[in-house]
Length: 508
Image 1 (cartoon, rainbow, N blue to C red):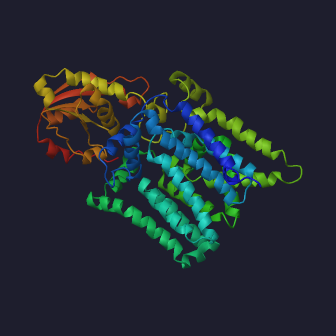
Image 2 (image 1 turned 90 degrees about the horizontal axis):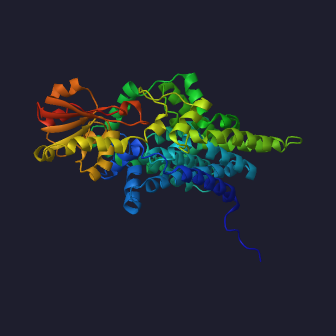
Image 3 (image 1 turned 60 degrees about the horizontal axis):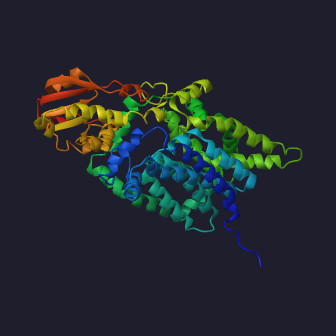
């Protein structure tokens, strides 16, 4: 009597590569420090709502649950993004089988999924972006399975994933819209005559509805946030620059695989819809001038799968067996050296030298100057130092002033740092006009005595009778605009803080 295998054959290869990805993340998980957004997410998780200015609630709810179970250490925060990234690797392998590929194609596609620099970067720290890639990849797999027509209920699973994906990041709307376009443009259009796609859409909309209600109640703050970010914060990117950035952040080593995969999808009756999804989202981003490479990066898993299958099938022809080792060698030997571009394996000085030696640096995405470290690494430095500098000013105050002193910061990274590290130095909670901190209001501050982090003396003098430069921040490897930021001690706000608060909202 034969024994049943411990794992289904379809999962063996994907799980091996998922383990490899987890090992890479484990090696870097505590290197450097807390990322700017992690500190902000922690602050949001303490004041849960059905929405936030810059994101829906799913990732924040997940973080709140995770923190209640495991705490706030770097390992506690970062295991979930790492496992989400490993899940994306598994789904990539399942897409290969869904599209008709074998074990070699699974191995090649999963290897590509492990070595994507931008996926390594977003899966290193807690943010909604790590889960976004997972939801897009899973939605692509479920869409293919639903279109087989064998189990109509698969459409409901797709609707569930789309709804949760929307609650994680509203860009999942792009997938839904592009998938609808793909249905219209392919032989699958007849599916629209059945109730199942509409049931999936209705389920997704129902799950997303509480967040829409929150948006209505708060005056659609996310629309204001996106408009301001597009106009004032983000660098606009042209057609050529957009695709150059895609090649860099996805790794030049992987270009042949995903480019072959895109062609293979478009030529395939079964997978064409996913090729259309990719091109439709890319066109939307190019027309919009988006400089965020991770916006399209979430859509590559089907391309890796289809490209690996095309190489597998081509290598099966007589005298083409050499294609397999050449493909693996090209991806591995050229892709592995770029892993440190996504994960902080190296000490800072060596990281800077390594990056400079490779000349591998995508263009800046925001109207801010970067230092020697790219922003994805630089934003892991300086936060506790900031809290210490502020505490030095705060603790030097007379007891009476200290009792009524508030701490005002110009951005949510600074505010998150004060809220996270501040309690160990005896600091009160921070206030800030930036994104969701503005909605949380003045948090008991009156404006009689205020420590202001950042900004200019002239701006502070416009609001206060007395402004003293009490200290400056000092962080060697942080973003340049965080290093040497002034810390002002201000007294005598010239109007009630609640009234001034209504004038300084900064959604961007």
